[in-house]
Length: 278
Ligand code: NDP
Image 1 (tube, helix red, strand yellow):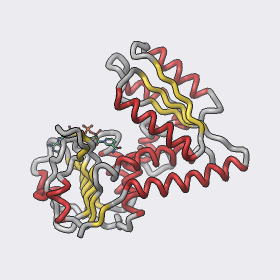
Image 2 (tube, helix red, strand yellow):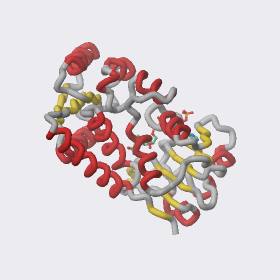
Image 3 (tube, protein in one colour):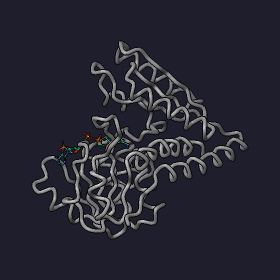
């Protein structure tokens, strides 16, 4: 029987630990505030922003919401970020992505002060991760490392394969697995023989962005499979990048969708915010 890696339970544990830490910091007179900027009316973004607000309330930090109109210019947004960078009351700044097409996301990410970059997307944060220095780490991959550790899954010495090389999931995931002494391979759309690569994996992290693409033919018997994907199928039900029902019989541990990686992203965002209070 495969071990189900319970992201809902583990993320709750993390948030409860953070809640205690925040209370202790508050007793020392320290506070924290997360500024969340949303541009436009994308319904999925509104759900994410609301969940972040709820998580802040739960652990006891202030959330400051900046809901800006879709038509805002890039410059107006950059001015808003600059104000927040200079505001001592604000410890963390997050710009909900995606942004409207007329705004350059890279420029916006780079405008956030690296000291307040709780999403871990700023080039300075990415550079720090690459050379093993302290800095904010992208929340989804950081959450996956916590899932593995708190489920008693050893990373050191294991063959780890990450499918996907995006800046927010695949690349930082590979760097974090390497930091934990895994032997890491990154696969992507130009990988010549994907199955041959993924079948080597003791730990397979799937961030391919294609519903149920990874079935049991890609997976080594007894592997650990982490499914980062989130999609809605034709019946409006959530599913991942992994064909869970086909794979589950063949693995030693697997994350479900929903309730696996998803809840960890916000828990690690909260972790990053609380780290600014130290
Ligand atoms: P991207 O679309 O940015 O990246 C997908 C990656 O998969 C690319 O590197 C691409 O390769 C690779 N790829 C695409 N097709 C294939 C293929 N046929 N074979 C091998 N590799 C392929 O996605 P993200 O990294 O942003 O997200 C991945 C998934 O994770 C999505 O489903 C997303 O919704 C989900 N997600 C979930 C989060 C959570 O909190 N749970 C947070 C963020 C994302 P190439 O580079 O060559 O194009």
